[in-house]
Length: 191
Ligand SMILES: [Zn+2]
Image 1: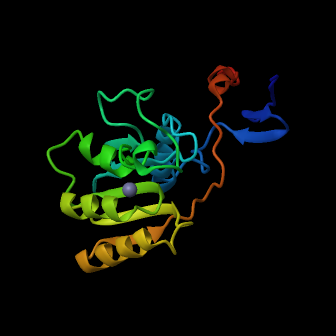
Image 2: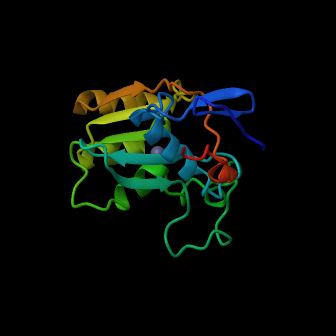
């Protein structure tokens, strides 16, 4: 995409003026960033119906664990079913590891106690147990579209009893586009 520079140090990109002399105001805020990492890691999932990611963050805003839903380590994706229906043993449910479990197990520090977890979907009851036992104190989720299902009711019950806070994350930016070509955009030459 061709960019035209004007004499005020501004770059014109697709008709928008960007001031290159002052700090950006449209940078990703922390929580949008962590939720984006969760969504990006979900893109690694091979599940044909549901791709979920999770990102665990400590109180220094450092990411200490990332995960997405997938089959257990060493269990080849092609040897296990991805179906949602049929005999239980022929569905994915007995086998698949949820994103929250993988994020907790993948932690790169000794403990995630006191951390926050960012997840695309409200955690199921099994993941609620893991969240509670790991000491995670707060859950940020994008969607609770299954909130009326029994396992979600059980999940909220457990989180409430254990005092784990949860809230829906409302992102400042509804959509984030990763454009690998943007790094090659030209900026104005220094005077
Ligand atoms: Zn779960």
